[in-house]
Image (tube, rainbow, N blue to C red):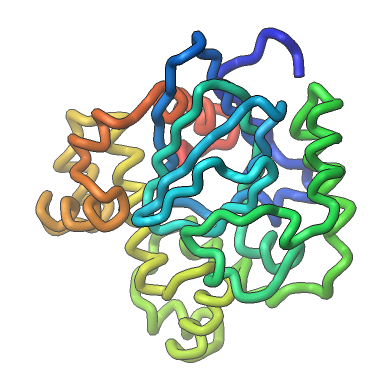
Length: 279
C-alpha cells in the first residue's frame, strides 16, 4: 500500500465481476498510539474483508455477538443488524458479495453465516494467497479482482432467479411476497426456502431491511426531509420507522447518529459517487 492512504476508497468491479460483487472498498484509520476509533457498518450483503499488516486489529459487534479480533482474512455473512467496529488503527480492504456472487463463488446455505464472521480459509483454502496479493499490490481492487475471477468457474451456474430477485429488491417497487413469487415462477413457500439459502433471510425480512436501509441513507443525507423520505419509503409514520430502527440498528436513529464515526460518514458519500448508491 502507498504511504498516503485516503480514509475511504471505493472501486467499481470489472464487467466480468459486476453480476457477482457490489464493489471493492478500503477503510483506513490513522490514529495516534493509544487511541481507538469506533464506527459502524450498516446491514448489508455478505463480504470478504482483509486486515492488512499483522499489527493491525479490528473488532466487530453484531447484535449479541462480538468478534474480537476479527480474523485477519474474514468472511462476513449477510447481516440484518448494524455492525459496530473498533480499531486502534490500520487498513481494512474488502469486497461486497451479491447473493449471486455467494452462490457462484462459494455456494451452500448462506443463512448459516448470517450475522457471523468466520475465517475465509474455512470457505477457501486460497485465503492466504489473497492476503499476500493485497499486501504486495497498491491496487487492492485489481488484486481482489484477479483472485475472484480465478474462482468464478469452479462451480456450476447458479439459479438465475437469484439475480432476478436481487434486481427486484434493488428496484424496491414490489413489496408483496406473493407477487414476487409469481414474478419468479415459484410459490411463496419455495421463495422463502430460496431466499434463506442464497440471501440469508426470509423474503419478508429482506424486503423490510431493504426499505429501512434505503430510508435511513436518504434520511442521513437530507435530515430536514424526514417526513417526505419516510413516506416515499412506505412507512406509515415515524413510530413505524423507529421500530425498524431498533430492529436493524439496535437503537434509535438519534443514538445511531451519535455512534457514527468518520469512516461511515465518508463511506456513504464516496460510495454514492463511485458506485451510484450510498448503500
